[in-house]
Length: 459
Image (tube, rainbow, N blue to C red):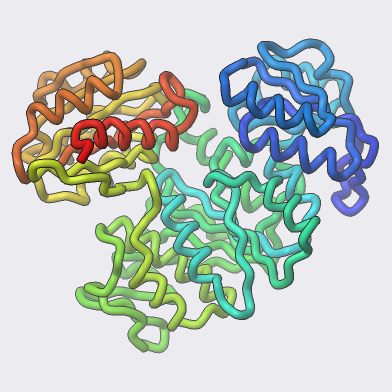
């Protein structure tokens, strides 16, 4: 199937194999079927979630195989690849050798919209920032739709729009590096880069490969498009010096020319008009100042009024699973930071509190260096409880410097912290790892944490 010219792509009656039956795979299959393609869905797993999705797709007339990939996947004109499958997988090489075009779900969905795309990526802070930006864009003139790596697949949103035909649509996408593999035509109107720190080094050979995957986001942007980037980030500050799109830095350190600047008490615009007083911000932490400035800069490009930007900054209190306050039991406060899937996100979490912390780390190792937590944990972390597949690696890295216990399950970790905590302490789930050793995703892990905490205090 020739997909070299975006304007000539027609999937009607095309044979499409969708590989990977997660949320994005299911959504891509339903979108393709709606457009008249012959869909074959394949997943190597057979978890309850996968089997539930299989039942839904089968009821829509889509052929699905689970528990392994048969050679039927190669009877295709096009593959839509799950972000969980690396582009250097043997099966992907085999498909390309057979002349099959391979694209990501984000790429596939983007073919079927002409509405502006605001695509946001970074190692940390993505979810908070896209929610801030989406809220800021809720004006009379803009109808934002939030999707991507944030719960709703882009394909699902595109399918809804094809059916409902909304006006003034702007797509706000949270983008991971995985989703930028196998990109051909994907072109945001605004690309937003929050930060680049080591992550997913279990997937990529090194940092350069990880960074390049992120940078794929701008490969199709032109003069009329925009890049918003963190000028405080040592990698990003040098990445966009000779690019076609218009560039806009943001900074909490006062670097460069920016649309919004902050001092000790307020944020003000380039005309020196006050946007908001810092003590009016709803989200705590310096990292959230950067997130807010990124969202505000992108919103300004879309002519969102400063009054709306300030209103969102003063009222938006965060998203589920990101430094989410769960409960207070006998003076001990429990926080769910399940979205912290890398070491740098844990650093941010630790730096957000002044109280003594009982830190729960663990899950599936992503190649992070846990010893980097020590400067952030000194005089603050009373104990670390490590669990799951990465438990031994965490223990080896930290046990000589911090009181540490290693357990097998998240439930055991919470119960140990509960027994050891004193009034005024914080129990913080900030895993620093992927969830896939014991949970389907970070949301399921966070929900499990909240359920365990609730059982500690049923009243």
